Length: 67
Image (cartoon, rainbow, N blue to C red):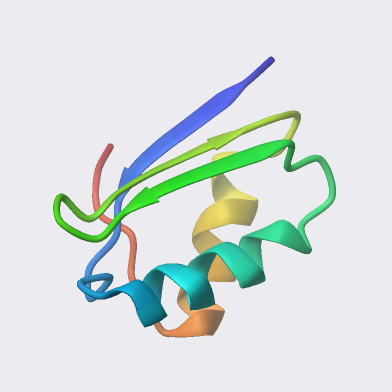
């Protein structure tokens, strides 16, 4: 199973986490999502590319930094 791990700018509250997870849940191949507003860390598991995750985050208004 592949794993994408990123730091997500602006994801500092529970509503932000809900927005991010809702957007990523719609991506084909996403099997699980772990998002932590305290550390702004995001882990997405499943056969999904980092490019697809970054694009979905950008569209939602949350820029992703380096892993």
